[in-house]
Image 1 (cartoon, one colour):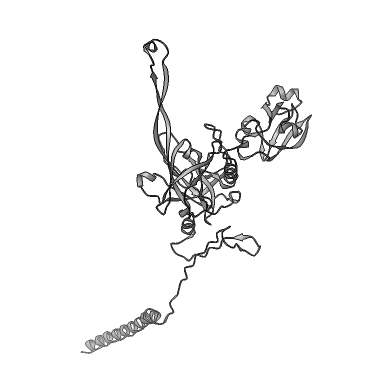
Image 2: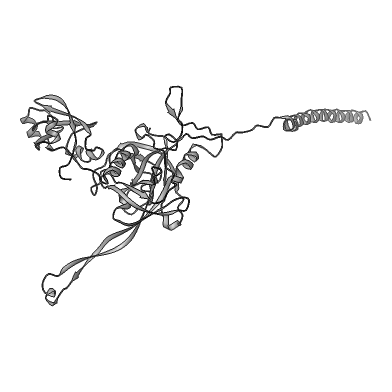
Length: 412
């Protein structure tokens, strides 16, 4: 009997301990959960987003006095990429061009004897459609795009994101830099904000916007892809008389139809024009993360030239050069073959005006080291008549600096 009473006492003691612990734990849970929800002040997030459009509104300045774009964005889905896209997207257009292309030739016989002698070869043409992108650069409806988008245009229509489809005309083209300016009929245009492509940093975010497969989707709303600036100042050998110089490399996907669209920084400013991609081989036509854009600072100068003159005025130096080989170097007392030698100077040319002479060795032009004539290919695509180019030459073993003031090619 005593054993049973002792056992009951132990049970009762354990039960009491359990009740006490349960009460303590329950009260703590109740206090942290219920009362916090009941009495805690609710936080209010103020979702304010502001982008100052440079050139269209009053500039904001930082402590140093420089213009800045103020962006205040909460921790939400509406980040800087979204805000920048929303600022530029209404200015991006799809361009549909009807072109005339030669698709073959056929023989034309005027009489019976043409069967035995040389008949006339008559080209056959057909109309084809080409698509690309562009963006509005001023309130008058001027649109910047690639030359290869509008080249040979017979008809040209511009599709706006708001649903408008307007007829356009080509104001001017520059095949060498692959840029063109188009004018849209109508009014009420919204234009982009220009950025500074000289301030780009490798690794910063950029957005490629364009209209790939506009007709396929039958939708003028632009497509957006995001990447970073992969490299700067990429130069390419001329291809089909197009000189791509100082290009911006990006891994933002640029697909067929994106050509002519803007490359945008995280502030919503256009810093480049999407131009072409490297696909790895001829079978693959899609993006593999290697795309290139023309810097906007270069494009702006071309735009001024095309709007004012309707064409690209060719520059004239009047200088003929050839590569410096070992025999020429030894004859001139040089121990290297870097540079190009001036072999001829045309009378009255900028080269003569700059004080250059035959047998001068050009080793630097502008900001580019000259080792062979290949370094001069496409060099002047970013220069215009009246521009001044610093030139460094070697004459009689001494370095001499000269200024080459370019002129328009005579008779152009």
